[in-house]
Length: 366
Image (cartoon, rainbow, N blue to C red; front, side, top):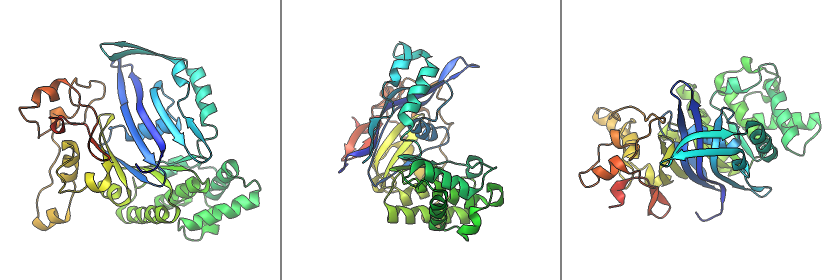
């Protein structure tokens, strides 16, 4: 990266405990990512790969125990420079056996108090988030405009109600909601899904955050509205240059909006680097999982030749029972005899194969 990262995640682990199976669900396991100021990082992968949990961990919104148990989340904006997990490790005791976590003891009250102290000036103001389901994220008993105005009063220097209202209407207009003054007085149930998503984008941007996290911003919307939301995000990125973590399973959206891409599987990052290198269909240097994802989506050539889409064989990894070797080994179709034993018994590290391009695969380390 040419500039210092705005957000730097190092060795993040977020686990949950399954009482029925009496084991840990390793939802996020040793994740390391960086986002430079002004860039968009696309995070892609199948459902259950840990994308959303990573974003919620950054915002300190994991409430179920044990939650975040280790790692570092460095955040450096013009106003704040801090580790968002500073001293939180003091509230956690981890017991390991054979490098495997067997138990976690957590002072939940102390943890939450310390976390809230850290995040009080960050959440909403410095880091804002667009959630998957906009209607469930908005308060059904308060008008959309009032909710945006409250966020403005809470996170900006604007304090008067009239100024906040004018600013809220400005942002409703900026995200291209028709009749913004009229929509200001609407309740969420009176708006369509697309309008609610635009309102959520307006609320997030109205606080003038340094980092915007968009978690599946087009989920649940029909194809036409999805296209319009993507057009809006592309336009806002061009105009505002806001730093964004974009989470999606739709590779076409990731390809259009992202500067860099992180491919996640089984709770960790399998590939990380420039979008043009990772998402190019004809690029040979990519992880087998990334290649499988790209061949499983429709393309112009596929439609022209009336060919079949290629499915990724097998099931998504159960993050309770993570194998000793590569997490994708059981589904990989590019395993060779030379690396089979390593793939089965040893998990590869995330290593650099080209400037800024990292891959977690034994194919590139022989």
